[in-house]
Amino acid sequence: MQLRPIHTLVIHLFLMIFTIGSGQNMVQNGGFEDFVSCPVKMSNLNKDAEHWSAPTLGTTDYFNECSRTKLGVPMNFKGKQEPYEGAAYAGLYLFAPRDYREYIQVPLTETLEKGSRYRLTLFISLSEKSDGAVMDMGAVFSEKPLSVHTKRELSQSDLLSASPQTTHIKQFPVTDYYQDKQNWMELSFDMVAKGFENHLILGNFKSNAGTSYLDTQNPSENEEGYAYYYLDDISLTYLGPEYKTDEVYVLDHVNFNFDRFDLQPKAEQSLKDIYEYLEKHPSLKVAISGHTDDLGSDEYNDVLSRERAASVAQYLIDLGLDKNRITSKGYGDSKPLDTTRTDEARRKNRRVEFVMTKFEDENP
Image 1 (cartoon, rainbow, N blue to C red):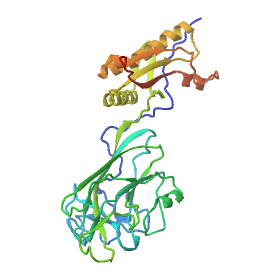
Image 2: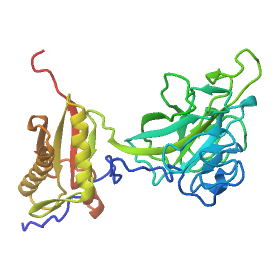
Image 3: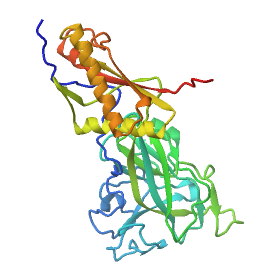
Image 4: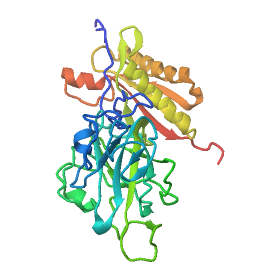
């Protein structure tokens, strides 16, 4: 039987391709530098700041040094504050009487990939004229922009009843109240994406009763005060995939010609993700397996699958992975993902897979 050259190895499903370079900010206009018009009136975020909007009836503010009104920088109607970077920032109430709240939302540059890890970071400063400070700041990701007809807090039940799909509220880790009125405080947390996240919403999602509030002006009085904060330099960056042990993942965009091994840039990024994850988790090892379709003889497919698995393994070793932490094996066409004899089925079956497992103690 004459062997047919197999021009490419098409990889499929589980492991998504991560085209986002490390450090690239996925929040559009995260520093608030881009604006439609210079701010003149209060409650102006929706009209003036590029990409940003308010998801509720709360009236978030936009400040820029170009303004000659009370929305200027560094002086404005809430006091004095230099930007963390650039010439602009946003301002919103995280605590106010009768549970009044303001929020801020922005589209991301692209939908987050399921199973990928991301880091959300922002800088926050308490306005000089605030009565008190809080230690409650959270984030929600949604499939589409939120538009909720309320001036009060967005609770978890409100978000569940909203038409766009949303994540659960995630609070920024905190050790103390956000009460610095001169310097910017950095807040950050890491998350694993579910795969639908397209917009980011920020604010305090708790009621006044549920908020940790420190009244610094009139601590003995019963009247509710307010805490107004400036936000700047908001970023969401890609950290890498989140792999589970003993789970099979199929590599993507690893392309083979008949007699050579070529990697597209996307494939190189996928393999670098695997390498970096293994470097961060030294207790894990990885097994690479190669698979072919049913075209060609069994002998030829066995050899071809071994060579492809070995090529991927060698690439990881060349990146710096200890060869004792990696094995490779070829299975030919003996383990198809799809047994129908169609071109699409054969495309699925031409693949390279990997499984991460923990090292077993050889001397218990």
